[in-house]
Amino acid sequence: MTTCASASRNRAEPLAATAATARTWLLLEQPGPWGTDALHASHLDRDTARTLTAAVEGTDVRVALIRRPGRHADRTPRPPRRVYLAHTLPGASWVRTWLTDTPETLSALDFAALGRGEHGGTGEPYRGDPLALVCTNGRRDRCCALLGRPLAEELAASGDANTWEITHIGGHRFSPTLLVLPYGYAYGRADAPALKGVLGAVRRGRVVTERCRGRSAWGRAGQAAELAVRELTGEEDADALTLDEPPADASRWALVVRHRDGRSWRVDGVTEPGPAVPASCGAAPGPQPRAQAVAVTAAD
Image 1 (cartoon, helix red, strand yellow):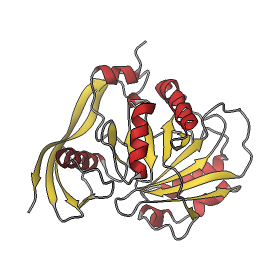
Image 2: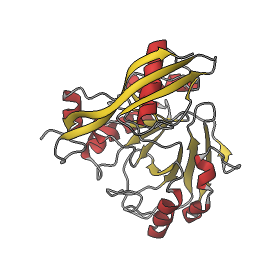
Image 3: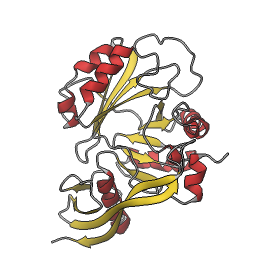
Image 4: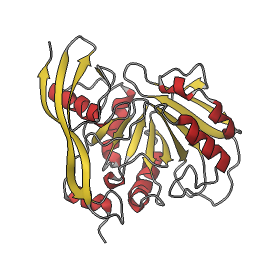
């Protein structure tokens, strides 16, 4: 049986501009099994899951569960659990962390402020290795388990990153997929040798665009525009480029990408149906919307 990942790869579906959108991530350690909707189908307290889901709505904050690679016993986890908060806007990215034995208190965080990049001193600054978050939730899509779990275990064994499994970052058909923090770039069709270069670049404040799906701080059009300018200029500095305005959801769009040295580019693009592939295993093939840049010109 053809998997969604093999169908996407066989059709050479582009990776660019397919990353999940979130300016700020709240990551909660939750060992044990995960269901299809992991936040609500795990050993996390159901009331906590419901209140967190409601609290982040409309705030540019996305909640995901994480766990260490390896075997996951079907038992209620014991506290304390690791929490990460990460903001991904260029020039303002940060990661904060702490341990909690009361995850239900997370819903009291000021998520509107967190979405704007204001952490208010919550937790402590994280200064460790890059966070490599590999999607492994096989209950959501089997490709994430078949391809993601071996990658997570290999990365963890290599010691090249602070590696965690994560519940869902979108794009099962690009498995194995992962999110790298602090900058929030997502990658697809990843393997350990390629990721060694990605993680080495992150340590130097750089970004590798090969197999990059985009920066989660931007919408799909913004991801396409930023990656197009990086391809044109060869710019690798993770925080060198920003967008003048949030991307709009439209079939045709134009965005201005600015460099901190004063240069700027206008990126014209389109969002249109992509190749007909299954969005996930078991789904019927269908067109997957794709944002792509069609012209990049120097702006005045």
